[in-house]
Length: 262
Image (cartoon, rainbow, N blue to C red):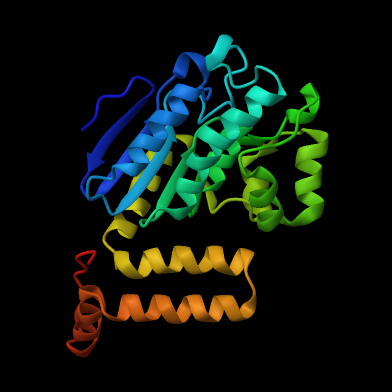
């Protein structure tokens, strides 16, 4: 696997585990970290699911506000716009459009762009001490990295407005109650639970799961008719896959299917 400076990648069976690895900065998302994350997501190396987490006490504390010079994510409005359009936004878009399921295991803070990255997962698991934060209002900036879209669709306008305009922490249990995340688990069990879920997804019908991801994105952004067409296209693609034939055969033979991801 490629050697990175700010992330760690590891294959666990058919799961690619990606760990944000700047624990001394609470995994603040420098431009370098975002670029390396994009590289890891581009090169899945045959993995059939991704598990994304953070090293140490946080998932990701947001953009690196202490960076300086041309590598700063917050060196004025024009520089921020450039960083978002060319580095951060593409990474969040990548996560949402990967051809495999994504599980995010949130330990500690998921703030700013870190919140966006966390919520881009299909399944967001959070340790009970974790929290989600959009604190841009406290420094005169606006949520970015797709947070406005992700939050509004997950929890509705009123709660999304509360998060972005008041800048208050939303704890893991409250996030689960709101439907912002999949569920909470004890901190000590977070990685075991997340890996078990990612492993289950990796053993599934990968072609069909990829189509499900695309169809849900279409449903969130498109019309009913567009969603109907997307579902029909997805059904055609999935129906022609080896896994669909295996699923049909296993049903007829009353056995558990063995999907190959093709």
